[in-house]
Every structure is written in structure tokens, then in C-alpha cells.
Image (cartoon, rainbow, N blue to C red; front, side, top):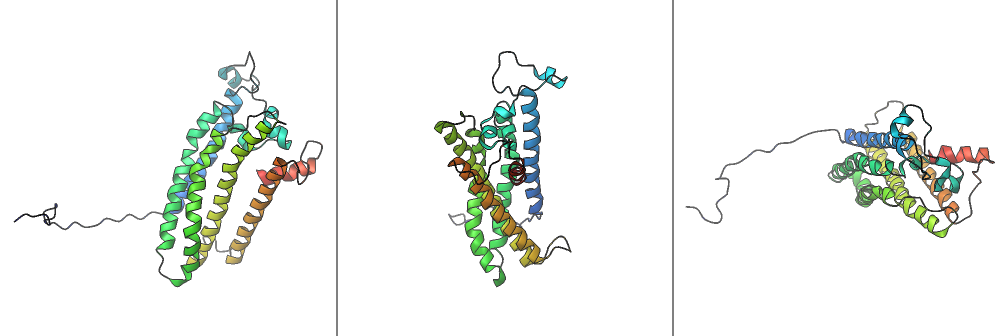
Length: 259
């Protein structure tokens, strides 16, 4: 007799299916997506962007055939601000900006999926040695997910204001802030990864020690702090060191840090 408790499946018992995959491959795909972003954005900026605007730019085909680019990177806000250009300058102007905003999803989606998977693989560990990592992961992973998901805001807030004006600086802050948070998320991810594989005793390279991985994490944290302090010092008008063309040593060090 059928009643409200009768299974809709007719009482049949179905089995379960499992799927195993290496989530590090997902993260690798996401990192490769960032490489594709830079390569494509640089190509489009060189051959399709017209900046500053001009009345008689060369066509895309003419530039492919050898005509000079109509993109003058030395006129960008970032170049005038720091005295040299950052990679993002090649992604900040249309049509490169629009194309880059689409390609960045090849980075964001895989990395978000990886963050979720990593959260699950850590928090499901039963060995007590993972307890501290589980506590940290419950804080870090949600932040990483948010920082990664909203990374696309760098393309919403273009640093295309007039150099030397308050409005121009505010546009740069709106552009830099999601990038800064993305950097922080990547540092947090590196710490989690090194911690996890150290606890698992599954370091992929035999010559790498746990102490070396911890040193790497410390260097990442120190670099992030220095990079962030460097940028905000320029924003408030008190650079940590000069980086103009007349200070080649300072500029070289800044370029090494920012690239």
C-alpha cells in the first residue's frame, strides 16, 4: 500500500559514485589563466589600444605589418605615478581591458574551485596534527574566496585619471585595492599549501625541506608587506625611496619587487 512514506524510487537502493582528481591541477590551470591574461592583454594593447586618444591612429592590420603602436605607456597614470610601468598598464585600456575582464575568469573560476576543494580536504582530516591548520583554514579560505572572486574589480576601476589630481589618485586606489587583496589571498594560500604538504609529508621535491618551505612563506609575507607599504607610501605622498628615471637603482629594485 502506498502512503506518504513510500520512497519515490520504488524502494530501490542505488549505489554511490566517487571521483578522484588532483586539485593541484585545477590551481595550475588557474595560474596558467593569469599568464594567458597578461600575454593576450599585452598583445591587444600593443596593436589595438589608442592611448592617448588621437585623430589618425594606425589600423590593427597596419600595426601588424610594422606600423608603430598607438599605445604610449609613458602617458599612463601609473607610469607618471611611479616613474615606470606595471604589467597591469597593458590591461587597463579598451579594447584590452574588456578582453582581459573576460579572460580573467580563466583564473578566478579555477582558483575559487581550488579554494573550496582545499578547504574540504583540510577540514575533513581526522588526525589531531591538523587541528591548528583546520582553525586557520576556516578563517583564511573564506577570505581567499572573497578576494579572488572580486579580483575582477581591477577592470571596473581603471587607473585612468589625471595624474596630480585627487580624483586621479582615488581612481588608482579603487584600482589597486582589489589587487592588493588578491595578493594577500595568494600569500594566505601559499601558507596553507606549504603547511598542508608539510603535515602530509608529501613535499614534491626531495631536496626541499620543511624549513625551506617556512622560509619561503616568510619571504612571501615580507614581500607583500614591503610591496603594500611601497604603494601606499606613494599614495600618501611620502615614497619609501625614489623610483624615477633619474634614480636607476631605486627604480630597478622597485621593478624587481613589483614584477
